[in-house]
Length: 92
Image (cartoon, rainbow, N blue to C red; front, side, top):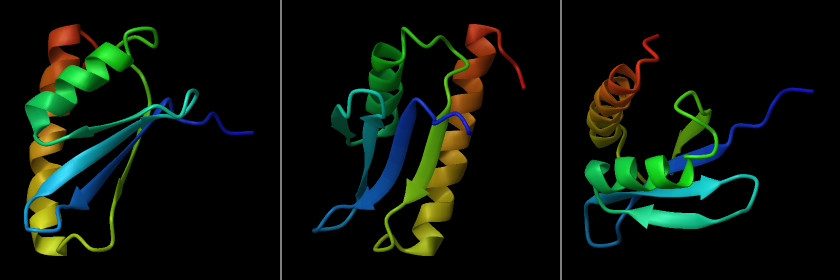
C-alpha cells in the first residue's frame, strides 16, 4: 500500500478573483487557508515540523481556477518549495 502524503495542498479561486491555497494535514484533517505563498510556507513549516523537511505534499488545483493563471501559481510555488528545501539542506 502506498504511503499517503502528510499534506494536501489545493489551489482554489476566490469568488471575487484571486486565489488561495487550502492546506490539509492528512493525519489530523486540520485545514488552514493561505492567501499568499509566504503564509503558505509559514503554515506548512509550522504544521510539518514533526515530519521534517522531506515531508510529502500532494498538490491539486480546483477545476474553477483558470489553467493559465494556475500555471503561473504552480511555477511560483515550485520556486519557493525549492528555496525551502535548499535552505533546509535537502536538495533534490
